[in-house]
Length: 259
Image (cartoon, rainbow, N blue to C red; front, side, top):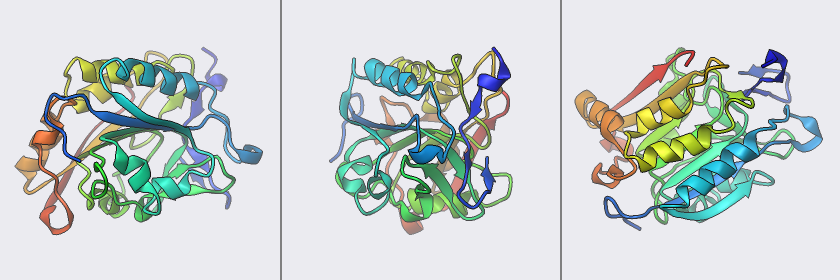
C-alpha cells in the first residue's frame, strides 16, 4: 500500500504543535463507542477507515453484549469529561473510541470533531458514577505515552475514579485499509476469552504498518498491578476490585513497538 495513504492517528493542535451498577463475572456486559472520521473545517486530517473500525467492532461485540451507545464526536467534549460522563463513559463497562490523540507534557488528549476541541485526561475521572467504566480502549496515538516519565501525570486523573485498565498506544497507530478490522479483531479476541492486553496487542498488529501498542493498569503493589494487567479478561474483570485515589499504590504498563 502507498504509505501516503496511511495516516497517523496523531494530531496537529491549533497552536501548531505536532502531537504525535455491578456486573457478575461472565455475564453480558455494557459497552459504548465514540468515533470520528472527519473534523470541522479540516482542523485534523480525515481518518477514512474509522467508521469501518468502529462499526465492525460494534457488530462483533453486539453478538454477546449490550451496546448502549454509538456516537460521533460532534460536541462530545462534555460527555468525555466529568460534566457528562455519567451519561456515557461511566454508563458502560467498556468504552471503545477511534480518533486522533496526543500525549502532551501534562495530559493525554483526544480530538473531538469541533474545531480546536480536545477531551483532556486531566478533566476525566472514570469509574465512580453510574455503572462505572472499567475498560478504556482508545485507538489513538500517544495517549499512553510513558517515555518522558509523565504517564501518571497524564493518566492518573482518569484512574483515580476506579478505572481498571486502559488500552491504547505510546506512540503511533495508523488509519489504513489494513487496520480497518482492528476493532472487530479486538472484540473477537475478547469474546474468545483472551486476556485484555493480548486481545489488544493481537488485534492491533498489522503487516503493513508499524503499530505501537500499550496497556496500563493500577495496583496496591507491583505484583498486584502486574497481575491485574496480565490476567484481566472481558469475562473476569469484575473480579478485580476497583482501586481509587489513595488505594492506588502503583501503576504499571506493557508496550510493544512496531507490531
